[in-house]
Length: 367
Image 1 (cartoon, helix red, strand yellow):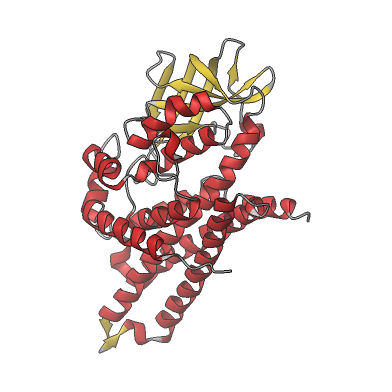
Image 2: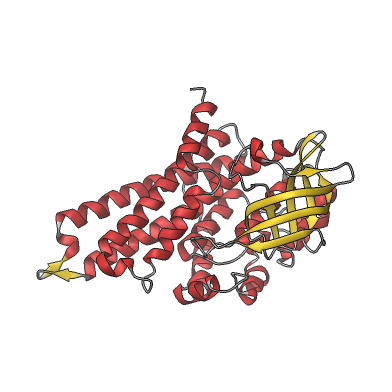
């Protein structure tokens, strides 16, 4: 069994890294995080037209390229490394919900637009109660599909044209597609710590939804989507963790105190070594999760929680240690270290924090 990336997957990595270095350097990230929409439309179009990134895991029959979750993980790792500001992750979540809904009509209606980059889509399921499980869904849908409720922490919800919304019908939790232009939809960007990934509050006041999949079976779909999302986020976290490790090591080599590089001092040397160990272990967890996701095997559920918990801890610790190694300059607004620290913290909490996933993992393996 070979868990190494193929030559084609490594070429994909090189291709995406070159694009990110050109289009998502620090100045571009700072510029986009300061805008209301949070991304560059021209770059978004290039991602679709030149790179085909939005279509990566969408099947060819719906206008996509039909790659596996492993290729998606490679791309997300590079996006995490570059702190890309774009509604890519949100579109991936919506695509996964549609793909696993079993609703061919919904797939035909929405996936081609997402694949081409013309449709910005978001998955709206979390609410102001902050819960990530089924009990947190309080929005309701009547028999005609009109939805009432408030969704919060919706990634890129303020710029989405299509919303996949989880709401309670008489049959149970169900999924609905909602046109964000519906007069019953109000989306407001939230002020969050990490502005490299925008989130929004979406208020639904009788917004018309179209049922996606089977009525009352929405959580069956969402449960799978959240496991896949946890693996995808773990891959993205690995990219960020690897970059802050490189940043810290380079600074330890360049910064001279008392006539010698600070990396020659044991305290700094050990910090870098510990970071390397954690980052490499995080890669192992994330990569195995990607393989399980690509195969959709029985290990996915447990591996997803394992990867999310470990990669969250590793990224946050690496980002914090990077600041410590940089010393005073690492705390300044002008230095990029804080951008990665904030992304590490927001990613740690997304889809449930490490404690939540450790408990979930214990339940899933029967402890």
